[in-house]
Image 1 (cartoon, rainbow, N blue to C red):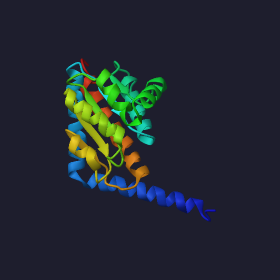
Image 2: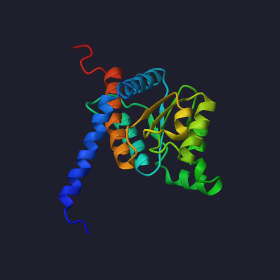
Image 3: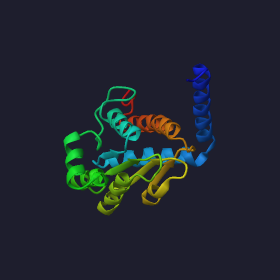
Image 4: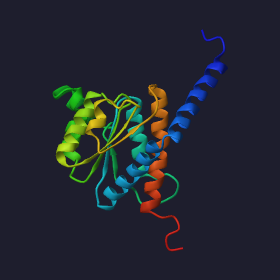
Length: 200
């Protein structure tokens, strides 16, 4: 039993703050996030879409990010084309059963992806086999591949056009930074595609 839960929570919040501070201090991290926003904006302006994938908490992040694009983030505007490949239980279980779990994203990319689309691959380790297979399929099909991962990046980094590496080895802290930076990226894309004060 934890003797002082409040202290444990404090330590977690300190670790969260330290991870944010490390990201803020890393110019390349900030520039990569800005480049990702520009890449997404360009693809969407060209009539393309965003496909997102991840496992566990990263699957939740994929769905969260897709929701921010399709619905809204900061204000009312038209929906932005984004699909989380983590949500259709019939598709995921059929592919998992017939082809293996490692191919659940690959098959969806092959069926739904088109040249010019963006595949946003989220993996804290950068080593998730099904995410790597999806990224490989995306590259072969002419999609832009963006990776959200941890500081080491794993094999995913080598498969990405742009990779955002959270400066941490802790899965929860990486995931927290991923969704924080995703909100910033979504906000930039939203503002670029649908300027709030346009025509005013």
